[in-house]
Image (cartoon, rainbow, N blue to C red; front, side, top):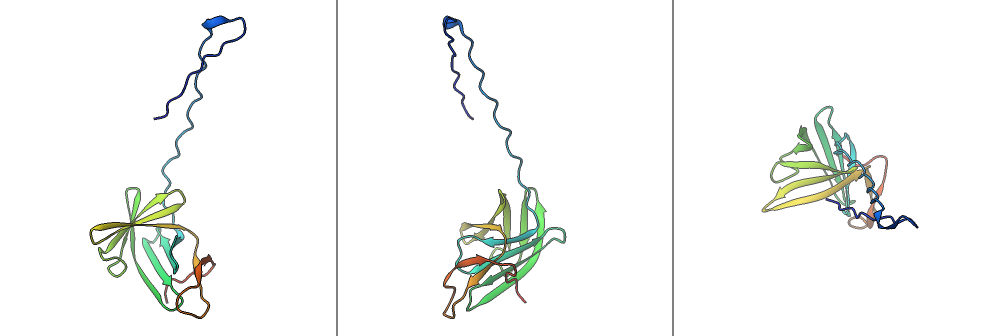
Length: 150
C-alpha cells in the first residue's frame, strides 16, 4: 500500500493555520491481461522455439528449430480461470503446462521432477540463425514463417 506524505502549505502571511494539501488520487490499477490467440516465442533460448495458440479451436502447435534438428508437437488448449492449460504427453513429462499472462507476454509453467519450470514467451515468431555448423550461431531473429512442424 502506498503511503502519501501530506505537506503543509504555508502561505506568506497565513501562518500555521494553513490546510494540508490533499494527496493526488492513485491511478487506477490495470485490469488483468487476457491471454489471446497468436504466435509466441521463447525468450532466452538459443534454438528458435515457437508456440501457436488458437483458443477459438482449443488447440496449440509448438515447434523448435535448432539448425541441426527440429521438433514439434500439438495438443489441446483449454481455459481454466485466468490461465490456459496445454495438454501434450510428448511435450512435457507431466503431460500439461500452464500459461499465465504477464503483460503482453506469457509465462509457461510446467512440472519437471520436483521443480516448477518457468519460461517467458513473447509475441511474434522467431527463426534460428544457421551458418552451416552444428546448432545456431546466434540468438533467434524475428521472422514471418517460424517452424511449427510438418
